[in-house]
Amino acid sequence: MFKGSKIYVAGHRGLLGSALVKRLGADGYSNIVTAARGETDLTVQSAVWKFFNRERPEYVFLAAGLTGGIMANRQRPAEFMHVNIAIQDNVFEASRAFGVKRLVFYGSSCIYPKKAAQPMKEDCLLTGAIEETSEAYAVAKIAGIKACRACNIEDRANRFIALVPSSMYGPNDDFGLENSHVLSAMIRKITDAKREGRQRLTLWGSGEPKREFLFSEDAADASIFAMLNADRIGNEFCNVASGQEYSIKELSSAISRIVEYKGVIEWDISKPDGAPRKLLDAARLTRLGWRARTTLEEGLKETYQWYQRSLCANTEAI
Image (tube, rainbow, N blue to C red; front, top):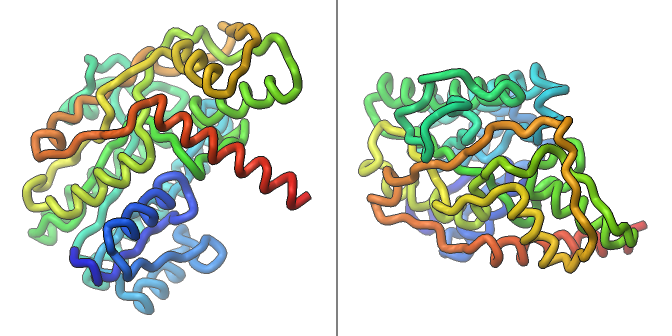
């Protein structure tokens, strides 16, 4: 992948996609193509083929897809499965048809069994039952990972690279209460509680589950690293992780410090916790020379500052 290579970032306005565009630009890649959802609907095969026929990208980062937290996954499982499988299938087949040299696809840590040994290694995939609340989304992502492997076998080339990042966060995350993941939802709720002067705030679950968080710009860095080291990775998928885990309670305390919220946080144990622990073993990728560089505190500060700016922009627009 040369500095002038034509690179397509699918989902360029989202959490990971925007981080990819930023990092690629900083690294000197100058020929980046994007397409807004209104321009090219990736769930429609004819639209995807038309776009690939017109643009002829050499490299693809498939950061587009439908994601959401526990509530969204419980309420819309069929939509999560359909949209993600449709996008994956359409982009994979167009990439094969129009000669894409390399493609990076992203799975999710929810693909692993609910009771998998921690930290979770890549070879524990499909060795047990998946956590129920994210089952449909996880099945779609597993299909994408297996499709990468199948395409490489059939095409006799390591063109498709699958990465499985731990829970990502950062600028351009979804802070809506229905679709957001735990970290962005917590920033939203704690910020709202401070602005409204509330002295008590109730959050879902027990606060005991542990999660590993990956700053979006570290995920983007890992993506470019994987693209440049595809032959060393071979026809295997790789976890991408920070190696640091925190309980949900610890996360709430860290966010409260950054937001400067002084109220009391209570926990609603009638609400689901999700998987008790989700720590990834990223040794497969780190052995090749990649490591995350952003601490949780650094990433939270940057994410919160972006969220504050977006609130100000929305207020001014109104």
